[in-house]
Structures are given as structure tokens and as C-alpha cells.
Image: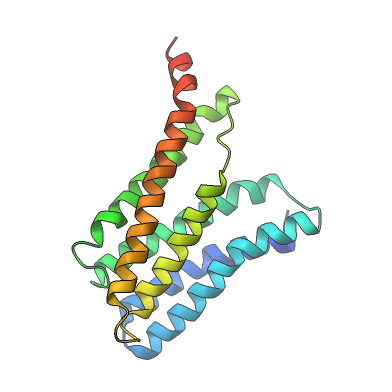
Length: 183
């Protein structure tokens, strides 16, 4: 259970409160350290899955923890970035859309699990996660590198749009199973 891929995922989860704390502290040194930790955590999102497949140690624990770690990282950062005002009022629209979709899809998976319906991760959903992680890195970088405001907004909105589209895809794919569940 405590193999390298799972340890990377657990490390990503442990890094979340540290990153959030550094963002709340503010100031350039804390923001740089938060950004470095965040990028390392984001890289482990890819690395843990790659290593698990390459080392042939894909586990149930890893399959469960990985999406939870992703959602915790993105969700916690969105909340803290809103609190610290790194997100503008307009940025809150894609941020809230991201939060709603992530909670909705998690609930959908939980609801369908006992019915042995698996909600598979699509390629677009993987791109969505990448867009979210990149957008948050740029938002974190924005106070440190002048002139990133427009790029930050555009990438966050792209992530928000991809998030809504993939949420709709999951819902439409699960819809027949939701109807069956009501019978």
C-alpha cells in the first residue's frame, strides 16, 4: 500500500495546507515557496500515475487517493486564492464552476459506485485537470510577475469552461443509470 506512487499522492495531500498557509502569509518569499511547492505537487499528479503503471503497482488505494488529492489541491487553492484576493470578482465565476463540478462528479461517482457503474476519466477530463493546475500556477505567479493578469484570466476561464463541459459529459453518460436507479 505504501509504494512510491501512493507516497507521492500522500505527499501531495500533505503539501496542500503548507501551500495554503504560505499564500495566506503573503509576501514575495512566501509566494515563491508556495509556487515551488505547488508545481512539485502538480507534477506528482502525473508522476504518481506514470510510476504506478510503469512499476506495475497500480493499487485501489492509489486509484481512490489520486482524484481526491487533485480535487483537494484545486479546491483548497481556489478557496485560499479567493480569500487572499488573488482572484478577481470575475475570476470567481470559473472558480465556483470548478468547485461545483468537482463536488458534483465526486457525488455522482459515489452514487453510482454501489450500482457497479464506473464513471471513466476521459481524455478531455485529463486536459481539464491540466488546465486547472496550469491556471492556478499562473494565478499564483501573477503577483510575482507583472503583466500576467490577462493571461491568468484567460487560462482560468479556459479551465472553467473545460470543467463545465466535462461535468456535462459525465452527467449525460450517467443519466441512463440515474433513471434506472429511480426504478
